[in-house]
Amino acid sequence: MNPKILIIGACGQIGSELTFKLRGIYGDENVIASDISYSNLDIVNSGLFEIVDAQDYASINMCIEKHNIDTVYLMAAMLSATGEKFPMKAWELNVNSLFNVLNLAKAKFIKQVFWPSSIAVFGPSTPSENTPQYTAMEPTTVYGITKQVGERWCEYYNQKYGVDVRSLRYPGIVSWKTQTGGGTTDYAVDIYHKAITDKKFDCFLSENTKLPMMYMDDAIKATIDIMRADADTIKIRSSYNLAAISFTPKEVAQSIKNHIPEFEISYTPDYRQAIADSWPKSINDDAARQDWHWKHAFSLEAITKEMLFQLDKKYN
Ligand code: AKB
Image (cartoon, rainbow, N blue to C red; front, side, top):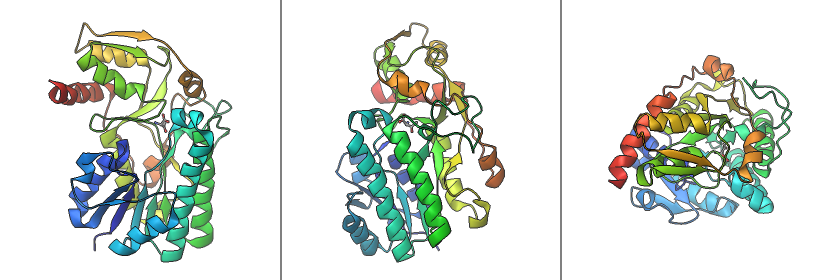
């Protein structure tokens, strides 16, 4: 039988693409998209949509009861850069929404919950290359703190109450369909838009800032793979390290120049540089590869080709 899915935060960068993919797999009638406002009309007009406030238990509960939901993807979050501007709001949104969903899962026997964590759980004391699954974690951003604490609660609800919650530590996600919002890795999306529209880009990170990154299709595949895996193969109930590739702004710029020779990049690092400097440069995701056979597909060159192709169609 198909799961009955609620996606909270479906208008965002990852939530929107997840919605389309899950509808393709399980049928439009089994996937309810929701968000706090009608901010993405592609999603609002594409199928079942509800206004749900992730911070309001009653609002989520009403939607779960109305649609007989048994699976929740909680994609609503305030990301790292915006979180530094609004620390208390980031804490409240990221932590309260998770508690609401975990408590609903516990009370209502929701079969499965997906909740994304991030490479932001790591900090300056973490080994920055090939970062292990288990290592020092002293995040210095509010966003990272909310994700780290969230991971502890996910494991707790799994072990104490049997909640089947599954989680991935997403790297920066590169995609073209929906705009990013408030992340430190957003430059890796903006650069492709500007390459098509302006042929130049001023980067808010310095040229050699290497960060773990992934194409959206890989991120969606990982999310669906972990949710479809047998419960006993999911051995980590905090959150799995997840990796594909790592690159610097200079390397993306070069890969764009291979297609658009006149493209130019300049660098004006701002407050986001310190956030990026506190994160790992590359991630070891052996556990995900072993436990539920994770495998990425997109290289930097493949990402650049696809991004430029899709954005060229969109703008020209
Ligand atoms: C951000 O930059 O805040 C996010 C993340 C790495 O979780 N993309």
